[in-house]
Image (cartoon, rainbow, N blue to C red):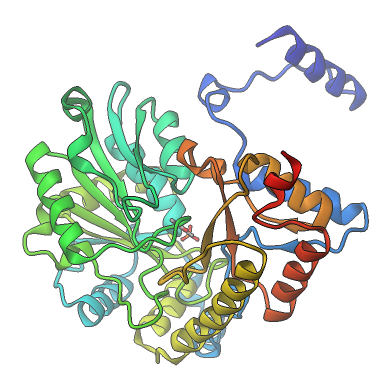
Length: 416
Ligand SMILES: *Cc1c(COP(=O)(O)O)cnc(C)c1O
């Protein structure tokens, strides 16, 4: 521990009247604080200063969980059968309902007993998948920009993340052929995510076919994070990688109810696909957690079996907000195309202004929270992510403030 850190820890301890120097693990020291926790601290500090902060930084649906799901939970909570330890890997009914949902939605078939396991959300599933497959010296091929867990959990596992750049020029699809052979030799895992957070990029079956044959050729597990399967617009429909014949030989997909069913607070999802991968993940999980409250599994079954009209409703809402944002951003000088999926817009920062500088100016001058693109990886430099989880009224207020404070795409030029 550097001396300055020992000193500050000691001073802190003395203040609180406790004289203990607690040294955290090298593992924990190897990763940064969770970026969104840090961004939230800045937001809270601005709120404490009395700023009316508009938070366009979060990927959390603002609409409530559909009533029929909440009702199912209410009933299930009252049933003492559900108060006990749940079975490892999810109840039989939950796994069957998840497999049925995938069959209806994507057309592929699995054995729910061996090819499905429950998750406490996608984030947990990603971490434990990485823990199950990555050792020291192993490489995990991950998108850049990408969901921060891909990288940090790889480092926690002692492995090395290898960034696959997603750029506007390559339609936010990685060039798998460009990965050097020495990297491939050490690679154990490929993680991809379409529809994509944060770029809003989408992939078609042709791309997944390439990813699956790449994984087969190099004997790598392909883990597809399909968190946004239902959030697509303008006739775009997101496929599952498991629709590719034979994909199950090398592919496991992670699904969550968080985004499609407005259930971010409930913490439930599932992994589906390759039986060996599902078994490994379930084995690791059984050693570190004791699954999901049964009542939540009952509620999730209600989600799988229930009507889809709220999905259509929310997508319409996101389209309206997106169209509003596109119009207002164009007025402010941005060249933006409407995103076909997800509630994110991946915006270029004005010329000469870095991601971090732009995010800071947005908060300090206009009271708007947007994460810098670099929060998602080095290729995020020159971008910020704007989320559409705010009402049209708040979005309009945000763009009004940008106009008022001369935050435009040309602001860099004006300064130069
Ligand atoms: C939201 C999200 C997840 C997981 O969310 P959970 O709430 O943990 O299920 C995983 N991957 C991406 C890309 C996400 O945006």
